[in-house]
Structures are given as C-alpha cells and as structure tokens.
Length: 170
Image (cartoon, rainbow, N blue to C red):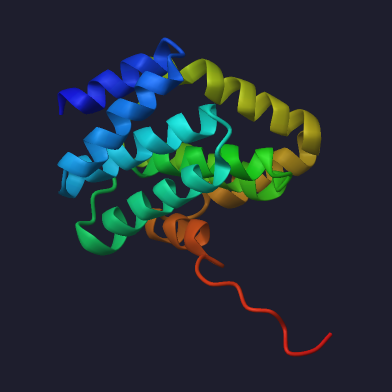
C-alpha cells in the first residue's frame, strides 16, 4: 500500500516519472479493492503524462473490477472523474459533463470525498467544460449524469467499450 501512497504523493509533487514507477509497482502488487484504487491512481498519472489511452484503459479496468467483481463503489467517483477528464480532453464535452455529474451524485450518496490534492484539477476541468458547453448545456448534461444510479453511471461509462467494429456498409 505504501507504493500507492508514494505514487499519489509523487503525482501531487508533479514528479510524474516517480509517480508512474510507484503506480506501476502498486498495480502489480495489489488485488481486490486496493487494485481498483491503484488503477485509478495510475489513470491519474497517465492523464498527467498526456497518455490518454493508458488512462482510459486503467480507469475502465478499475470500473470493471469494482462493478462486476467486488461491488466496491467507494472509488467509483474518482474513476468516473478520470474518464470525465479524458472525455473532455478528447472534445466529448457532453459526455464529460455527464460523467462529472454522475461522479458528484455518487459521492453525495455514499458520503465520499475527493482527496484535496485533486480538487484544483477537478475545478479547472469542470470550469473548462462549463465554458466549452455554455451554462445551460453544461447544467443539462450534469443533471443527466447526476440522475443516474451508481450502476447506471458505471454502465454509461462502460458503454461502447471493447472492440470497435467497422460498419458493413455506409
């Protein structure tokens, strides 16, 4: 577990190389609930290192373990926020706002809080989305996400996940 805390501390210090090293080690040495936590931490590192594919892979793996495997929902808001940041960075602003709204609602329902070291990044991402979408579209998308149950939010985040197939025609 010390590797996980070291990864998050290095990430807070913006020492991304050390954060990646610690996160990689943590992922290979944890299981169950702790693996969900370490995958989410490594997703945050990947986002900071501008490696969206790795971040998305780790976040989806964390959701899959938590949702299907052990029903560990405490880390779901953090994982949804990682996916929201990635969606926003990719220009999928409505999806990002829905994911942020869903993460916020899950936090409220289960009484979870975000680690303070992630607050500034969260606030910046939400503000950028609000600017990109405009107040009304942002509020609508946020409310749509917030209306989802935890299971629905996970399913929404996982939709379209998997092998993409080319259409037979068109």
